[in-house]
Image (cartoon, rainbow, N blue to C red; front, top):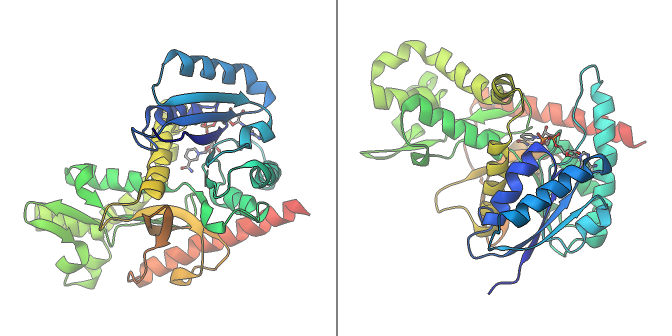
Amino acid sequence: GKEPVRVLVTGAAGQIGYALVPMIARGVMLGPDQPVILHMLDIPPAAEALNGVKMELVDAAFPLLKGVVATTDVVEGCTGVNIAIMVGGFPRKEGMERKDVMSKNVSIYKSQASALEKHAAANCKVLVVANPANTNALILKEFAPSIPEKNITCLTRLDHNRALGQISERLNVQVSDVKNAIIWGNHSSTQYPDVNHATVKTPSGEKPVRELVADDAWYENGLLLISIILFGLSTLKCSHKLHGEFIATVQQRGAAIIKARKLSSALSAASSACDHIRDWVLGTPEGTWVSMGVYSDGSYNVPAGLIYSFPVTCRNGEWTIVQGLSIDELSRKKLDLTAEELTEEKALAYSCLS
Ligand code: NAI
């Protein structure tokens, strides 16, 4: 059989951790024939809870799970890991300044970067989930210079999946028939969920939105177009409302979940983290792209040196930014706005270092 892969989950005693580790142990992340050894890291106040999670992993008797390391020691947690899912971080609490939260996370990500740099397996792939996810990933990259920058990413797949889910709900089509939405930028409310290039499989074949549009005002709104195609022109009346609603729904979905559950999203975050790693390692299907926060090379005139969410395809364990997509004026503004926020976050993070 295959050699086990070591997967680190930081913040493993938290809510996302609790949903994520059984998915990994069951083969959801790396496939049903890939044995895994789970490394779970948390901080001393959570040590007892972490041990409880370890007991449950034993009790679940997962055939693929070849070992569990549950620890509050960063070096032990990071040693030999091939994949690192960074879920642990310092949450923003009521009354806290943005700078104080940033400062706490900068120091966490700086020290965990050093531990990964020294002790992880060569070519370790890193996914940062903890917020501010893009900027935490950037700090991790800065302080783990020997880890290739291509290996350091952050999670925007949850937002991507939310966009697919919203299109599917609204149009009453299977989510598996919807693809190629894009999340641009920051995992924050300035993100730009873009449906201009999304397609839906219909009885008369796959419908690329652009192909079906004659009018620019319509083109602005991929979702509207798909609904016109599927439901007829009566949808036209609410075009702008629909578009605005779509973007706002995706952007504000996290807050809506907190309101409903009194806890933040965990199962969908865990599931999306599995999707992110699975597609990165095993590849995206032909003709499909996904959204990942990656180190910008200046594509689409996004400033280089930010961790920014782009549409990517993956092959042989490497992601590539999808090139050549047309960006209309409205989209351009939204791409720039979220880049500005990330540039500001980067400056704030650096000011915490000095
Ligand atoms: P949680 O508070 O339930 O769990 C966080 C865990 O991290 C706790 O067990 C805590 O003890 C641990 N932790 C804190 N500092 C640590 C450190 N230095 N090293 C290791 N562990 C540490 O939070 P939850 O709900 O699991 O969320 C985790 C993070 O994921 C939050 O930052 C949240 O904002 C973020 N998130 C990101 C999403 C995304 O799409 N990128 C989606 C949902 C949540």
